[in-house]
Image (cartoon, rainbow, N blue to C red):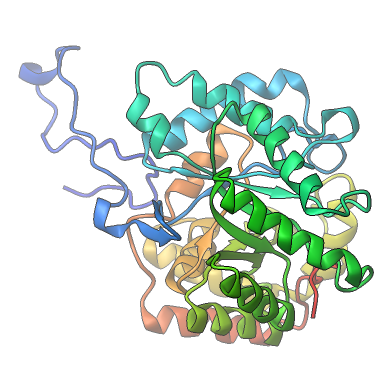
Length: 365
């Protein structure tokens, strides 16, 4: 019996339809999208091969968030958890203006409302990031930031506490306070593991060595990483992570939507993304054509192929989700692997595409 390989959720019937099993009491078996042994080690924790990012939850400026979307976001979260996703990435700065911290609040609310499933609640890993605001100048201020996040998340301990960015490019003296803040969070048991975000190769090695000398393992490094962001520095970061035993978390695996196949130079998203897309999309034709070819051959969608590439490269992608439809599509990236030939085809096409994703200005050297 043939199944659509792009079906994201794990509900399949292993029987032919018949009157005998048409009773509403019959429930087809639910097959997991990935097996327990396919989970990924992230510090002391085991997480799903893919997580979900929640940048859009509370962000009105870039993603058009409205509070009326909360019900849809809860359904999205529930669908993810039901299908084995247990890693959710957020930040204390996610949200626009008065909505800063909204993403953490929503996650906390959704987790506590998982009815009668204490074990499921306990398995969820929240990776949150602490902004290097200019007024956070001491380790104790970062500890207070962590405690504020715990309050919004309604948790006693965060899975991964991450520095959102390094200040080495513009305020080097503040950097040591950031690092000591991570140490303090870890030593006080406020976080199970620590990580960084937007650290370039040089600073990544420095903070790894500093934390190691303090007896604190650096568990993760989160950077922009996709077929659209595989420049020399990103590859170097990945190699450093592999060498030092740091798990790379790849954010923007779909290039803010440019690798979904949904947009063209004449069909752009609204807002600031449209300005960026107008610069980059015209030069992505070789890559988008290759993604479409692989997707059609695999009976997958273009976003599923792009996310699966990140998984095959040994990273944990965290595509953003703000609807059940997006979550279902992203879940279809699990349970299969691109072949080595397909990986080479996609990477060659990425190299042939003259335009690349603009590097995050917060990433250090």
